[in-house]
Image (cartoon, rainbow, N blue to C red; front, side, top):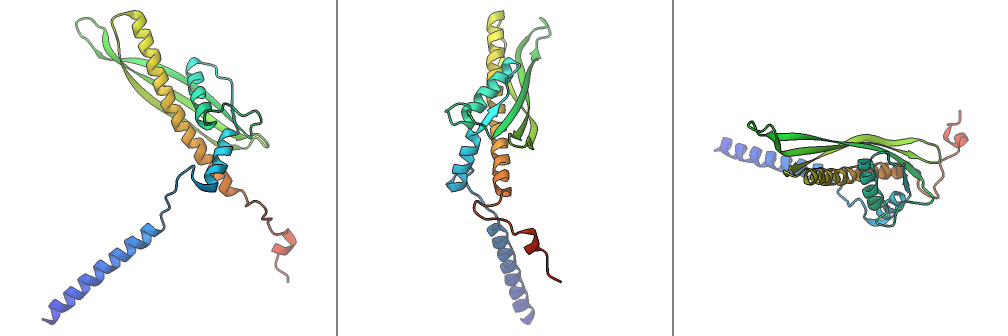
Length: 198
């Protein structure tokens, strides 16, 4: 009888501790919108202050057009940029589902790979860089022009996906940049005040 009561008490205590630990762990999590509140307004302003390099390929142009639209919220590129993003991108299309009797493919996949680097204009400090890729699947029609058009459409779809990924990376980097900056109006203590007196 005593052992049953002890086992029940121990089990209840263990469950309580597990629930308390889970509640404490979850209370440390913070979920907030990227563009919400005053921090979101500052992020939107910083995203709108990005300039992009001149693209060298058609696919890079598609990626940059989408990035300009996303970062500027449809207003275009900044005339007085605070940040500069260099983007290079290329696309490659390969055959899948090759027919044995005719040695032609009915479908393919296009991959777009984009490299990017964001720097602060004032001191040329690298804030973030990386590589993003996306794959778009397509059907190959029997007509050659239609096949070329299908490839171009697949490149455009993959370029749009890559731009959205890069845009998210840039927003994260600018959020970290803002968090690392001292708050406006708060000056760091002078060096003489920081040193302890002997």
